[in-house]
Length: 235
Image (cartoon, rainbow, N blue to C red; front, top):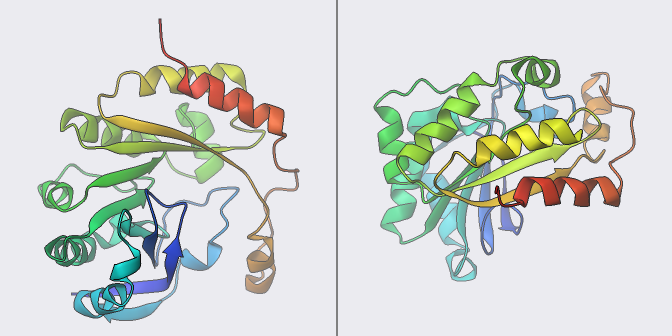
C-alpha cells in the first residue's frame, strides 16, 4: 500500500500522550480559515509504502516509551486503507497508535471497524458545533465529524476533543452548546483548547494563497474561559 506523505516529526509532544512519531499525510477537503498546513491540501507528497514508513518509525522506538505514533495531516481518513495498514504494523511492534482527524469524510463503512481495531486513541477536531458556522469556517458540513464522534462513543473508543479558538469560535453560547454535545459522549478522556496562531502565515505567502485571517490570537482570558466552559461538569 502506497501512502502520500507530507512530512514526519520524530519528537512530537502535542499530538497525543508522551513522545510521538508523527506522520503528516497529504490531502484535506477542509479549508479552515486558521489552517497552518495549507501545503498539505493538495499535491502528490512523497509516495511511501507502509513498511518503509514503519522502518523510519522504528529508528526512534526507544524514545517512544509512554508515547507512540500519531497520523495527522491534512486529513488522514482520506488515505484510510494506508492508515489501517501502517497502524496494523505499528501495533505488531507494540506501539501506541493515534489519529488526529476532523473526520471528513466518514461514511460508517466496515473499513472503520478495521481502523478502530488498530487505533488506540482518536484526537477529534470539532471546529464548531453549529453546522452553518462550521461551513463558514471550513467550507464543509460538521455532520460527518459529529457522526464520527457518536460512532467512537458508541464503541467506547478513547478520544480527545480538540477545539481551535479564535473570534469565530469563542462565544460562550457556542462553547456551551459544544460542551453539551461532548456531555453525550461516553469515551472522551480529555478536551483541549487550541488557541489560533499565525505560524502558518509564511506558508500561504510561499504558495501564493491569500491568508484568510488577520486577527490576533485570542487573549489568555478567552482561552481560560473556553477551557472552563468546555471542561465543566454538567449538573
